[in-house]
Image (cartoon, rainbow, N blue to C red; front, side, top):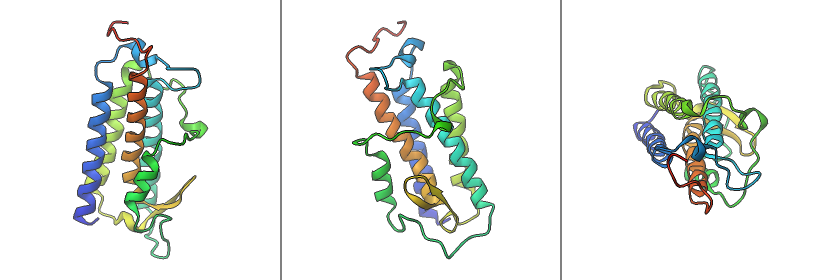
Length: 182
C-alpha cells in the first residue's frame, strides 16, 4: 500500500474511533438503551450494528486480500475516495441495514465498547500492516457496487462516523435521560 494511503486509512480509522468513544463515554445502561422514538435505534443498537458491520467487512477484506490481485477490475468509485466517504456519511437519507447486521442483542451493554474497540483495533492493524496492495483487490457493496479493499477500509471509518452522528442525535433528544445513574 502506498505510504500516503496507509497513513490516511490508519489516521481516519483512529480519528473516527476516538470520536465515537468520546460520544459514548460514561453512558449509563438506561442512557445506552434509550430510544428517541419508536423505530429509532438506541446508542447500544448503533454500537452493536457498528461492531457487526466492521467484523463482517474485516472478514471480507481479509478474504479478498488472500485472493490473487485482479488488475482487470475497477472500483465503482475509482479515483473518487472522498466522494464515497461523503456518500457514506451523508445522513439525509436513511438506509435499512441488512438483517445480518441489524441489532439483536448479541453482546451485553457493558461489553459493547470493548467489542467495538477490539474490532477497530483489528481494522487499524490490517491497514497498518497489510503487505498487499488493497487497490488491486475488490468485493461488492450492496448499494455501491465493486469497491477496492482500500476504499472498504475508509468505508469502515466513515460508517462509524455516520453512526457517531446518529448517536449524538440520540444524546441530544429532549427526553434523553440526563442523570448518569438514570
